[in-house]
Image (cartoon, rainbow, N blue to C red; front, side):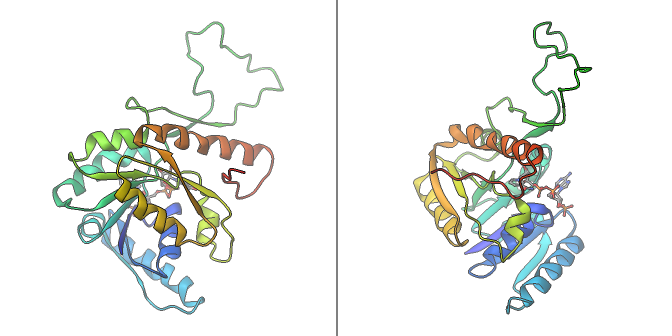
Length: 239
Ligand SMILES: NC(=O)c1ccc[n+]([C@@H]2O[C@H](COP(=O)([O-])OP(=O)(O)OC[C@H]3O[C@@H](n4cnc5c(N)ncnc54)[C@H](OP(=O)(O)O)[C@@H]3O)[C@@H](O)[C@H]2O)c1
């Protein structure tokens, strides 16, 4: 399978590229062709230590998406519109996968005019250092992406809660569950198979695309618990 990872020069893109390069043709995309090539060379150096040679390619986002079966949007929420604009003219039968989590830091839900929700920031027990899910108007990042993509494009939402650092650490056992949301059984099955290609990851069907917000919102929860309790590489596992 040909996999394009747009924003593949970033934290989560690196892990996806390294993990799938064993079984698939992986191309990482970037706004800058040279940057993509440099990152691909860096990833291939890592793979060499594991006995494989020059298998990840790098190019600009549009070219990467053009030649792919599956296109991962490994970009931040605020960069969605420009990247979708860029790839829309070349979309054909590609399956698009969103891993995007809209996230912000500190006191996101306290309305400035609210009298009941005001917290006395002088209270020394109150530590405002936390992340929260910033719900997009459409309900989730995935639903917003669906509205921007041409009608009929197959879109899956997954991999929101897997930590980038552990994903890129090829010796690490990824004992996590991956919630998969989408409206097409066909494209969900392909993402299930790609998930199983990464040892230990377990794909779980969450529901249609409308359920994506619930899975996306778990990510700031995981980050907050990890940072406040000094727990490394936390993810989600249903037992
Ligand atoms: N980090 C994690 O542990 C993790 C886990 C699960 C899901 N996610 C989600 O994955 C997505 C990427 O996260 P990340 O941590 O990998 O982010 P990141 O490293 O900050 O960024 C990813 C890539 O986005 C590209 N980019 C930057 N500005 C851009 C712009 N204006 N337009 C288009 N592309 C731009 C950059 O690539 P170029 O400069 O090469 O274009 C960058 O390498 C986010 O939505 C995040 O919520 C992250």
